[in-house]
Image (cartoon, rainbow, N blue to C red):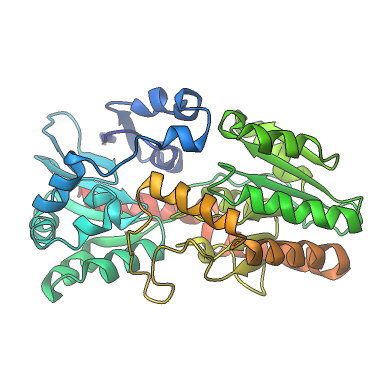
Length: 401
């Protein structure tokens, strides 16, 4: 029997869908245009600081026109030799059946919640998802679908079609080998990874600087693109003896070693729609300290395996319904707001939460092991390799049949 082929087609391929090819041997994955390889060094090519990098990120004529006309994120692709197309964050006009992986519902509307509310855009969306070639919208999280429906406020018929064609599948992560629950010690190692300002790195450092004066054996490792740090922040971090600062240019094996050798994962993000690193941290049995940001609470469960900060000052959606506001979707506006809040001391509650959470792990001997076991249980229940592989294979089989 001929092995069916899936063409990975999109503006830029994300690691999420490239990894789907590792999840199933039933299909052969073919990459059409791997701009991911060209754009993975985006941060190296960008400006040296967030202020400079996003100084030109304004709502220009092109974006205003998109909002006015309700222009969706749509690509056209006609093929002959493959059974199925798989894309990321955009709808297709094509002659073949296709699936789209959706991290954030606004991605289908050019990452603009204002377009998502546009009547013309919703009409186009209703038309495109009804096309027989559109087989499945695969949502990265439960929140992604909930947020799309809450923000779009579609007609009943459109919402019915959307729900019928939707399936939720978390990103594929390979199971690590020989993982044991973390053990308590006075020298607990905390780990932070991600873009420093966006993921709450400044707040994490400030909180850890205070906690290290009380618990000098604790340590913190920060993995972030170093060129994106403002000089004064880099100098401050390097002056703190219990913090190790590493550039974010690690191989998968090197990251695995960090997860294995550290105890607690810190993720106080202010701008995220998922957080793949949270699943990776869970797979190594790491308890979490996180903010409630979009889908993070699907991995970070309060009083189970995590401490979670609710309603941080940069929340850009309704925390109950997940309806997106879109006030801070523009990167320039986000950074300006973040730096302004930090200068005014408005982020102090986040730092206080981080301090209290760090202190809990450093003073309660049973907490680390308990939360570590719970992280491993949660990973096995919702994110394990075999479960995600089965879901991926089922979705593609149904779409290609």
